[in-house]
Length: 135
Image (cartoon, rainbow, N blue to C red; front, side):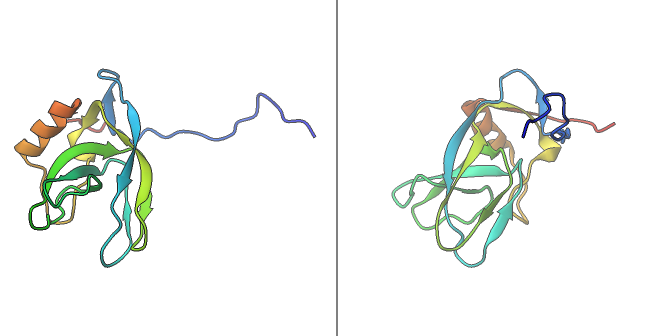
């Protein structure tokens, strides 16, 4: 059985998350900490925070999560694909470590608002944010 080389296999839709080609949107693998109570779905464009401090485990959680005692959560990267995070095991996924993204397309924890200090931490990591207007 042969496969046609000119066949349309699918399409890619533009979601407006990436604003510009510079700096390059570079991806890497990260580990997201399992959920404590109920499974959750994180969408592409979710801002992730790195767990550090004496109680930190080096894993990532959604920005706006509540830190435990002696844990510091710092904005670190942006999720590159949708992912289901369960309650039994940590999840390894792709995230953007650098790039230029639309601020209005980013997601954080419910009830949390992206702060200037979060944006500064992302900038230090090589992630730029801009206001993008949808046409």
